Amino acid sequence: MHSNEPLEDLLSEEATAGAMARRAQAALEEGSEAAFLTELDAFRAYLAVDLESHLAHEESELFPLLEARGFAEEVAEAKRQHSDLRRMRAALASASREGRASARHLLGTVAEMLARHVRYEADFMYVDLTVVEVERFRESLDGDLQHRSLDPPAQAAVVRVLRPQHQPR
Ligand SMILES: [Fe+2]
Ligand SMILES: [Fe+2]
Image (cartoon, rainbow, N blue to C red; front, top):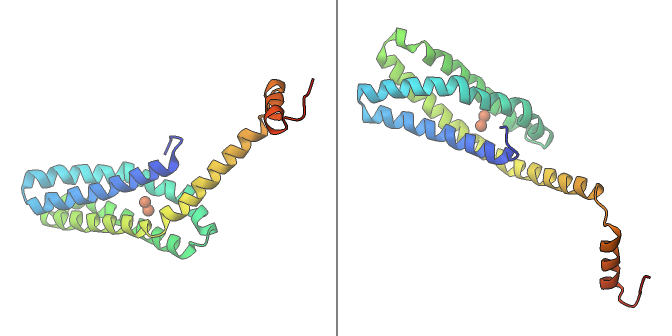
């Protein structure tokens, strides 16, 4: 999340996680070895880099806010799911040594866990973050207003409009 739109970034990361899970499930259902191996590599790389960065960002930036806003139980459960996902990621990373049947099973399991995790967070994360976003927006508006005062010609124009009987000279 590096843009000025943290909520949009978060939602796009959640959508990507859901899409990655669906892609892996589709590759497993399709059944071909080539599709499976391609997806296995893509999913492993996704879990190790992009998803890990998403999880770490949630843990450091978002969960503390959500906890402070009364979502402590949901955050504790989400953190538990994060550690499950990381354990499964490690298992999937070493799955080739255990044979392809095991890798298939693990890929399907991690994809399902990820899809369920995204859905779990959707129940409490966005509504509250919308409030956070709105507050940030208000703060930024307040900050702008503190640094801005009308210049004399603009003030005179306001006076003419609001108090036409008063004629400043
Ligand atoms: Fe998430
Ligand atoms: Fe998460």
